[in-house]
Image (cartoon, rainbow, N blue to C red; front, side, top):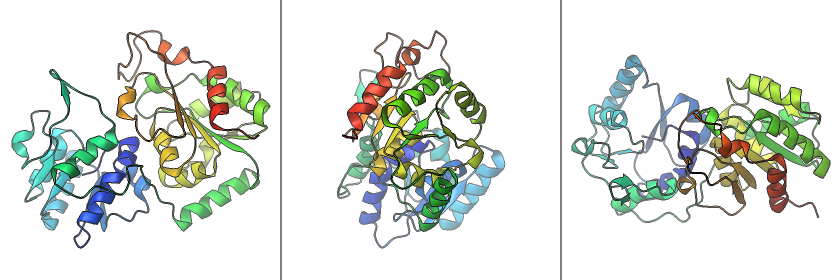
Amino acid sequence: MCPNWVGDLVMATPLFECLRRAYADDLLVAVLRQYVSGVVEPNPWFDRVIVSDDKTIGGFLRLVRGLQRLRPDLSIVLPNSMRAVLMARLGASRRVIGYRRGGRSFMLNGGPSPETAGASIEPVPMTQYYLKIARWLKLPPPPGIRPQLFISDRQRRRAKELFSRWAIGPNEVVIGLNPGARFGSSKCWPAENFARLAELLQQRWNCRTLLLTGPGEEDLANRIEKLCRAQIINTSADRIGLADLKSVIKRCQLLITNDTGPRHYAVALGIPVVVIMGPTDPRYTQLNMNGTIVLRRELDCAPCHQKSCPENHECMTAITPQTVLDAAARLYRTG
């Protein structure tokens, strides 16, 4: 039962590698939501992928019936929700393993407990959080803890078509900007800052700048394009899905992003990345930081993990375009 957020799914890939090695001769099935399915397309870990729509009653029941037909010997539940454990239990799994938290221990056959500090759960990097399940199962550790993503031939062809349409040559410097965040507006650096940053990047490196946005972020992309006096490639009309986004980011020399899913794409694909972080706790992602610079302000109200800021959003607005450019220059140098 896979994580529901893009970044968490990417950070779970070392666990997937660990499970594949430990259960090399067994049928390994991934259950994940439709909108993240492209993240692990393709992959070497799973024999089958079941795409779920468990947010609706009908989708929940269809998934349960599908699991009942499989009759799993073991279900490993990565989401922390009661719903995910309930699906595995109703799906006729002989054993259900997951974190013992949130009052759901009585539905589990076992699993680790989260790290705590007093009565609070202690934030740890999500890759280590997931791998603790493998340690609880006494499985051999994976060969590495860096996330992995894979790109298909079809995805490479799609990227080649896109870069040809954008008239980007093979030797041109490409920098990606990711201004959105599915989580909520609190994670988003202001549009005018992204516009100004694009201008500074073009002045510094004469680069081609890709504005990468997801579904529902078209207005944001159009606003940045309108505000920007530099040449910028607005990719919103190309509707690049999560599967094809991998090969697009792989072509970039640098990615600048809010603290959201594409950040973890860059880490897994070995692309330098500047992360503009506001309301989230850096301890959840403070692993595999080589090639990553995180910019954040230490404020009394942060991290708050709220989807929209009830104050003045200082955690994001206080980070200037020049600060981001300076971080980018530390990661990427043309010589």
